[in-house]
Length: 422
Image (tube, rainbow, N blue to C red):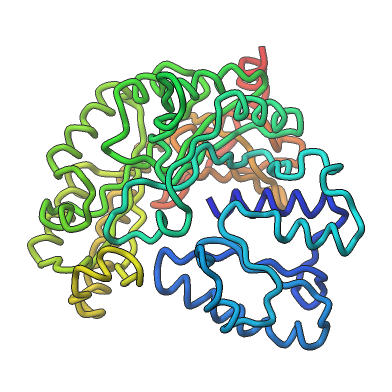
């Protein structure tokens, strides 16, 4: 979501006549987009803000802006801590900076066409629902990004059409809880309906989506993934923990058996699906037995990827008020390493199954005659290529596998392309 916000703000500043520079000390405007989902992320934000302070002293008219989840409804403390920052913007609140730049450059911002559209790219992100209503005990997001608010299907189709005209081939539909899309709109609308609307956009090749919640991934959504050609067969379905007691303390709203039932439903409906998940290691009160139950889930489901994070207390969350952060750091780190090693073994074994298979790969970039793209199952694939291939879907025979990516050689770059565009 932060990446999508950054893309939109970058596009807006380009529309206002600003161009990118490589280093902050060469910039007239410096924007730091913040994430505070973990303490380490917030620490990096504070460190970067502190290191940037001398740049303001050396050039007082340089504009500094802090955006993202570190900026809450009240900014008094931020103003005191970082008085050299000119603008503080909550997520998706771009106007304060745009207004300041427009005023200094004497530009009518309303004259900038597509000012908050994503910048052109082969693959880009489109937020479809902002905020979250779940209030998981470990999460600060609902307090920073607000409650759920869906964008209208018509608006999203128009944006998809515009992006395709500008060269976009793949769109990832985004939401803190993307499966909740449409619950706040009039009529009976959900993510499955939006899939069908976006699937009709001509010359768009692929649709992805992030991030799902087990309670809101309905049969209709699953069926739509299976039925629609452009929706890729990859689902990120966070479990966060494999223990019912930890899930209860996290206020996730499901049990491990309910989660496993959902996985079974997905795999029965989409047999060729790839699955990834998110796991928090060392949440408050997590016992050795609780952690073993998480490992058991990883072993039984055999996810293609696991995004693991060590729990850190976030002030302002329910967990920070209700529970003690009682798991020693060394225990958290030991559990994290054990989980990572287990998943590396599983990912290696799963990817070995792709050896000698032919995968359809959307070419995202080519550097030094080495091309990189992703298969429909979200596998990163490397192969020899030329710049003109960027944006094409090519067939690649997999000749080498590893836990994190695949390598191969192209067997066709025309056949799949003509099929998609016909």
